[in-house]
Length: 407
Figure (cartoon, rainbow, N blue to C red):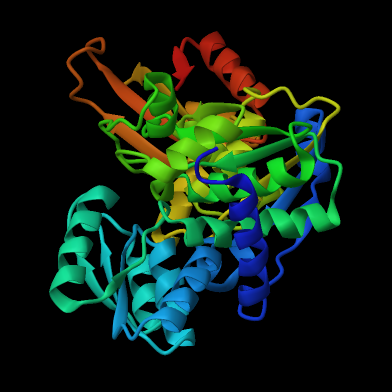
C-alpha cells in the first residue's frame, strides 16, 4: 500500500517503546458470560481502564512526544468529542506543553470537566466533531500551535496500534478481531499490526453505529464521503466523514464493517455493567454490541474486541440501565383501560403484586378521548423477574375483563 505497511508497523513498535512508561498495560480478559451468549471464545481488552479512561491517550502521547521533540511549539490544539481531548490534554501536561481543546457543544459535561482537569483550555464549538475540527484548525493558525488530529495522522495511528502489540503478546492465535470505527485511527493501527504479524489469518471486522456509518458508506463509494450523521449513544464514533489516511488503510486491511443500533449499544453497555461489573461508554461497548447482535458468526472462534473507553456521563447511566432492562424484558410498560370505578385499579395492582411485579410508575388518565366512556386509560411501568411473568399478568388481567398489552 502507498502508506507503507512495514514502515507504519515499525512506527507502532517505536510508539510502544515511547509511551509504555506513561500508560497502563490494560487487562485482556476471557469472558465466560459473553462466550456462552455468542458461542465463541470471547476476550475483552479493557481500555476503559486506561489512563484518562480510554485508548485515545496512546496516540495522543506519541504524537505530542514527537511534537515536543521536534519543534519549539508553545502548545498543541485538538478537536474532540471527549476522549481524544483528555488524551491530548494529559499528553501535553506530561511533555510540558500548553493545550487547547475544541469540543462540540454536545460533548458530555463529564468529558468537558475531565479535559479541564488535565490543564487544557476548553472551547465549545459546533454540534459535531467536524465543526469543532474546523474551528480548531483556525485557532491553530492564529496561535501557532501544533494541531493534533484525532485520527487522520500516522503518529496517532501508530500509538493506537500499540494495543494490538499488547494483545498479540498475550494471545497469539486469534481468529476474529472486532474493532470500533469512529474516524478510523484505532482500526487502522490495529489492522496494521495484525496484518504485519498474522497476515490474513485473522478476520478483522469494523463496527460503526447505524447513526453514523461513514466508513461503510465511503468504502461502498470507493472514496471518503460525507454523511448526515445523527446523534448516538456511541458519540465517540460519530463523525461525518472518515480520514483520507484511515480510509486507505481500512479499505485495504479490514475485511468487513457492520453497524449496530442504539438499542444494541445500550444493551451491550447494560450487560457489561450487570454481568462483568464494567462501566463502558457507548463507543466503548460498540464492538461487543456487534458480537451480541449476532451479525458476526463467531461460533467456535477465538475473538477479541476492545472496550475502548469508559467515560460515560453519569447522568446517562440510569437511562442506559432502564433501556437495557427494557430490552431484555425486565422492565415493561403495561397499557390498557379499566372501568373508572372504585376498586378497579386496586384489582390490577393486586395481580401484579401476586406475580412479584414491582410498580415503578403509574399514569391514570380519565380524559383520554379514545377510551370507552366511564373508563380510564392506565399505563403501568413495572419491574418483573422475566418476560414470562409479563405474559402471565396480562393473561390474568384479561380473565377479569381488563385488556392490557405490553409495550
